Length: 297
Image (tube, rainbow, N blue to C red; front, side, top):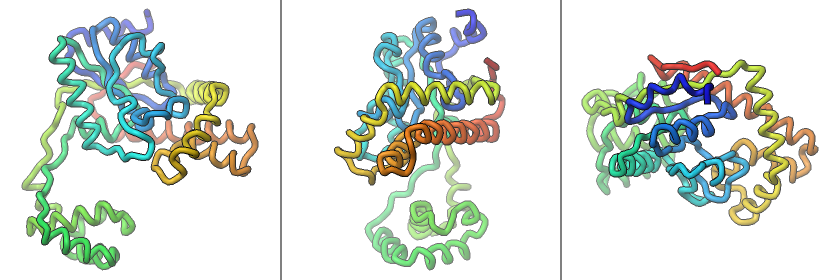
């Protein structure tokens, strides 16, 4: 337990978040701290929300959870979608449980976008009329034309949106048509309201070479635990269309089943892609979160 003594400060906190790249040991650390601080845990992992995806997600087993109540795990089926609104619902459920039972809340995981939403908040949504819906649907039949229109209306905002990002183009068009304001003006007049502004962040930092070794070891364990059979079952039940079937650990197994790689290459590709993900996570955390308290393990 000496490894975690520098986290004693959280005894005086209501909520904290532990972040770090994949395979950095966030989940086990969170459980150890939760046991000492009477806390529940909210998972930020984008794969752990799915039922039946246990090995590929590396979600903590019941034994590994050690009796600590976890939220954000096994929330939806693999063929269902999960977004930031559903995550915020999980957060409210976890927070309310903690408040009602006199516990603290530890948020842990690698999906930094969700965490940033908690800290920064989200802008109020626009109530879309039937007339606006019909207008936008018709306009989006030619998304290039819709994109060009928005570029004229709000060139600075549209620099953030790619021409093939139909979801964000649709939302921007809805705002413009319904409110009569450019997206930039709308968001300026309707600023984001932080959801958890006092949330303190702790980051686990590993030497890159050591982290790669941890990733390789976890990949070996995933294969030994039966990730190939897990993916076979998922494909037989849900096919390959759900978003989760393109996740790291699942996509590589599907390629292996298609004969595109050998067993050795399967393990290599999962490790490589996981290491690339870890690098992206570190970059995101470094760029998006300021005043972060860190502990170098």
